[in-house]
Image 1 (tube, helix red, strand yellow):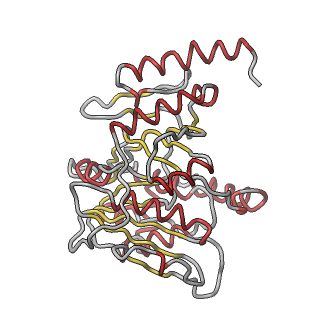
Image 2 (cartoon, rainbow, N blue to C red; image 1 turned 30 degrees about the horizontal axis):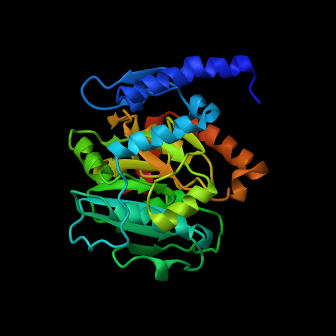
Length: 333
């Protein structure tokens, strides 16, 4: 419970500037009071000059502000959800989505609907089910490619990095979007990502805000396929997991995802760190929606602590040395 002084501070120092930026149409500029953003001098977007993901404090204190931000952002970047899409003969962009667990099937299907709604470009979606048994193949739309990836020794740990690398091998596009199966993307995301990469960037992290929905709003969205009436539970910024656009050439040059990572830990951060060792677009201006789901047990407790310690040890190695080691074994080709 915030004190009256804290509420007044949030109103004056966080909410008031946020409302000003919303009124002026500059919603990507929203931030917390002590954070610094750098504007792209030659194009759209803002870069967060702080290390880790943060939640917008004003939204946490004044939830109606999150609703206003969501509807402002997606008026500019609408999400178009379609149940079907023609099979692309020569996709320019391939979405690769690792997946496991029928409990998350509604999130996967909604995410695929937002990919089916991409406009102005031919895309494909490759779902990689990294599990010992096939669970969702029959539920996928006909236009979606499917790859089953059981572990040969029966290891049941979640191997998202392995799934990404296998999915990239199966994908046909020269532009790859490594995408989580619980994040809705705007209809112009693929086209915009491709245009950014055509400017000479090896990878692009153009995401600005991630709107976290609660369970009722997520389930309502599955029925209505729209954001009307939705109020986000939280709004995160400076997030580098969830979605990443990268050329096939650059994916191979940095060694793909590091398959040593298992379960849920810092694999996305490590991948991003290698991407930015080369020329990477890092100015965010695109909003996304995160669908509610139960937390994974392996994201908590001793296993998570052990995984984080391993992540920290990996990150002590300079990015270019990690690239050299990964490319020498060819996991990301």
